[in-house]
Image (cartoon, rainbow, N blue to C red; front, top):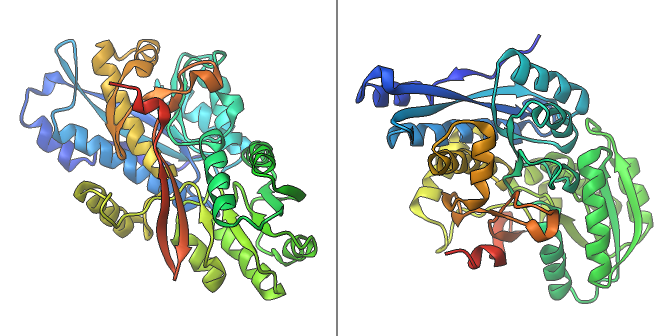
Length: 398
């Protein structure tokens, strides 16, 4: 049996009830947003933060008066299940969300393998599916109801690796390591191409099973290649810290990269000083002139709730809720297919600022959220933004 982590949370209950008290109860309806996320294991904090941000966005929308469609007011309730970051659990979660709970909108899903399991049902049953999964294979005209709500390897890897080569011109070889699942496999393919484009040769590419806790043998094998760079691709922060710690103990010194690196906290917690200098492509910095008061306050609240700073994986769930509201109001419909048809045409305020959906040239249809690529590095134990690359396509939107 599944244990729900959020059973019909009415937009953080108190906030929604307060909002409901300001208007006739008959005008209020609830739209359930299903979440398929890891709530246990190495990626648990990704999932916990994602659930928290879904609820925060739903609460904000309730406080602002809800979603207005054809004279009715709707609000969101986030319903989360633990997919344990694997295909088997992803299938069970999909059946629970769609068949048992009757979900028509997936507010967010995480992990390519469990997402593919969910997508096989969501597309067939006419359910709109928002996801942070990195796989290119889940997008395109064959999947008209699936939309990606964070940057993926196609958006991140080439600019990230290009920057790393620019500031480390002497590097010539790289060793890759990824989780042995759909997420890791698809990340590895793009990474190979990006390193080749930067003039860096891949000398090895290895895999490990999620749940691994002993990384010394893997680290020894990587160190033996004497690669200038170690790129951990889609490895979660806690695992990445362990790998770099073992490499440091062996004496390997080189450039450290985690393409899906989402923050310093998890890396430092397991890697200690070995996390120093790591480059990441999916982290967000919450200090500096470019950070707004709202972003800073949201991160502070999130850190208090889940124990670490928010990251771009989790922030996709916040943006998903905001995008769905904009699309429902544009379409003046709460039918999934009508909302999906409106999504490529919306411009909404994401966590990062004005955003929309595009990527038709890459995927064949406009299913990719358009947000900046933020290149970060851990310096003196602190996450530092070293370059921000705005979406070229979003710049053309008016």
